[in-house]
Image (cartoon, rainbow over all chains, first blue to last red; front, side, top):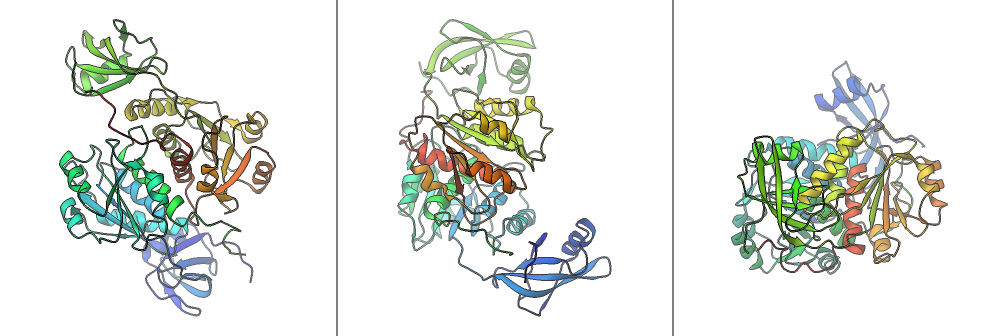
Length: 257
Length: 257
């Protein structure tokens, strides 16, 4: 059955299958009814990170509550890139920007790391989770990235999975060009990770500590000094382009036809 | 003579050579004296887009004016990537973000383009120019990118230099993977350009119009729907990594030693 692309795409926790009803949270119902003024029966897209993406119809229950009656699957759940971003939380709004962009760029797991020069220690986990969720809804992912609890750098390294290469953005200009390293890691079985530092960069002792780990490769991203969030976004884009899921041909747009 | 890296790096219009004095603007003097509380003789780095980067000493003239006495050259002027970004201006703060990130990523020329669905028609040119200037000072470029006047898409295409490939981010998923296209364009003699659309994407007629131009290649950036500013930032990073100045080895950090 043909149908226009739903105006609203939401993440829910409940199972998704034809005939089930998914209750919306008060915030989701408010968005559908009060903000977007959607009518009864209007199409909504739902995903839960497990059952793919489904289409359903909005069922208001008064002015402040609503559910979605699920009709049919639009996309099956599919593997997504096994790409992690470890990052030093930044000042002000930059951490939220980073989380949003990393979500769009397909990161599976976000790992905040406290380094010697990390400024942004007071970031709100719940605000970051909300930003990741909103970005996942908007960019049409089938999952929401996990945000790990913040840990000091030495603990991150002590528990690091040895089979996962960790590429470290080294702003001193040491290291190999990222594209060269990334091209050699396409299809790495243990997944991939990028680590970017805080506004002031890594301390020399941290760079030495990192260089001594067998899973670490230091990379550079050109001759200009990138802001921390720019380095993370640029690095993720290059990893997806050369070792991730941007290598496949796009073909026709995914379908609501 | 050894010296710490200057805390302040400024763009000036005046010529730079040993022994000359560069007057600072009232804003620059305010920043040095009132905001950063710099002392007389403290080192300042200067660039003007033509004469490389120079080191000098701050010379206050009262509380509100200052100049820099230029002592020695730190870097000679060098060619920078011939990369343009044509973009549809975006809503709210996103255009300024885009200008900042494009500057960091080494774009030589920014070309605002008005498309059928462009929302951000009221952007302030002078604010964008200030953002580009600040980003150029911060990222240690030797130039400030030029911002062209906004033009409609058909006029951009009518005057396009035929020798400059124009890669168009096509959010319908048509087009070749950007990395594949970029790798084939390394060292393109006419330079390179990326064009990204507005929040709502290009209109179908615009995509058809673009596809008919011999200098246009449509590219895709993966299976997720990227925000317009994310697509521009990601695309520029990939172009620099594969066809630009991120391919060279970094070697030792550039020097103020």
